[in-house]
Length: 240
Image 1 (tube, rainbow, N blue to C red):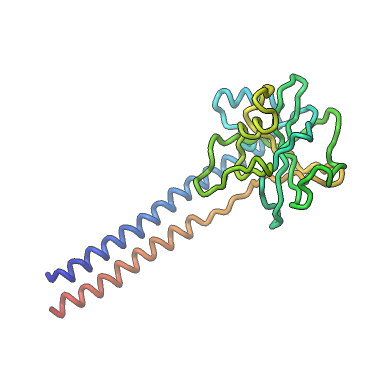
Image 2: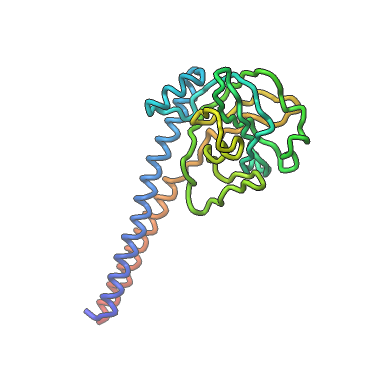
């Protein structure tokens, strides 16, 4: 066999293996995504629990993600932290506000979305509710590190977060002498706030799932390469 044909055969084989590998990876992603969707839907149907019970579950390494929860306390609006986000195609911020519970423990509550022009609390005074309030929503775990290296670092000077670092929110809000902080977040539900801002109920509970289509595409390309490449290679070998 000529060297050129051998090289072509190896190239075809490597291409088929590579494309089939991508298809296999997408199948694994499909299984992961289906598991995630099933877990989220199951947790959403659970009865609402007080935050103390959610914290107990967390200490036992039980799944708290998207579990309905309620908590009472008083907001400290002057210590808001702002997470850059989009909501229904509009850029803005999710407002994370510390809520001091009767036990003096603090939990950061994602009160919801405000557009870019309403970042300052002075532009939405009506929504700065005072006194003790009950918040209902969903429990969310606090990530310990950036999702990946492509996510920008949080900008403390501008009070803009690109990933939800509970430790950094705590340090920026309270400095080194922080109170006891609950090690999770609560995403507030869609109950309207005075002045309609922040707009609650922003938790994403639907997830795109196109992994099967991607897998079939990669497997199809692998099959096409095998057929076309094999036909071309067989023609070269017969002509020798």
